[in-house]
Image (cartoon, rainbow, N blue to C red):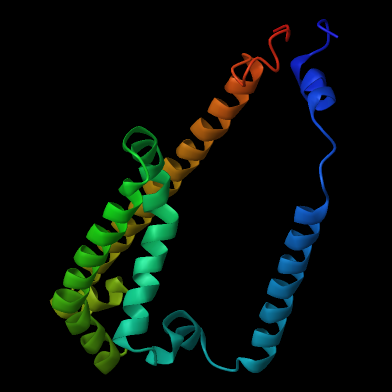
Length: 186
């Protein structure tokens, strides 16, 4: 057994897994597909209506949407290491500070921009700045800048996932999970 590659040893050492999580995920995915199919049948608006929810959601729902997007996607990935070193209170501090900062920026700046966008029919930041400064060049530069920033964000998140998976694999490969895999040959 010690001559076997570590993946084979890993597969032999594992206990039989329950299929319950697989069934839960399958039911969840079917529910999402059904919701998407039903929504596509009921939705008869334009792409503008789709992207900005027909500009019908209020400020509270918009604030909660932005806050939820930030808390689940970007902030939790970066706060995991901090929570490991300082404890679970990191998540409380993260939620509190994000709540304060998001609310302040949203109500000081966001509400005014939202009202301007609703009045003039803007859907994107590029449309707003292009009209505000009456410059197609500024709109193009801003578009390229926003795309580059989005690509940087995607690369950072991808790299973070790579490091997380690599750490798990190396922990298992080098036998640091309570001596379970100490006889693994590399």
